[in-house]
Length: 200
Image 1 (cartoon, rainbow, N blue to C red):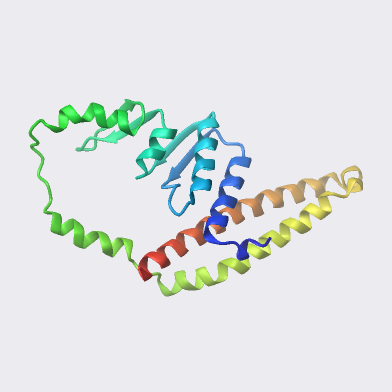
Image 2 (cartoon, rainbow, N blue to C red):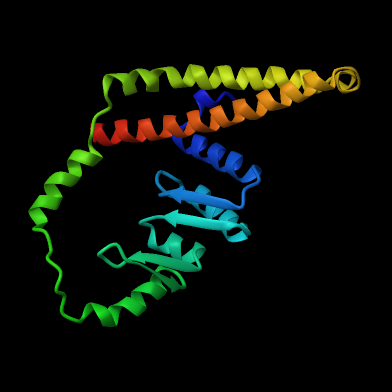
């Protein structure tokens, strides 16, 4: 199936599949559970639980954090980061006794926050971003077509015997198109999410 024909959830699953087929010893994920259906969320949880590298994860999904993380790095104010062993619930249990102590920090009025936040969340796409969003499906399709053509060439056993340099160039280009494709899919997802948020 062509990527341009996939739904948002299907594209998320494709991104996850591509992410976990590439070797990496560090993963950085920002709100990975946004727009995932339950099946894909459970798949992501199991993949991350099996992942042997280092994972930096930002999420508002507390259950997801408890199921995946083994340490919490919390912002304690004044630029101070503190590391806690365990998941989100463990961190909350540790922090609760401290929460009853009187706070000396100044807290901004709630009205200021509530006015500023929607402006960020509902920021409409610029003209340039709208054009970029419109062009991404065809760009992704072109990259997929190029990958298919390279794969066909690389499937020729004779090529490896007679043209080793060409094989190396093709493999290098395939890796480049893979990176471009991943970046394009991620950008498409981000722009669509912003467009949906501004429409809602």
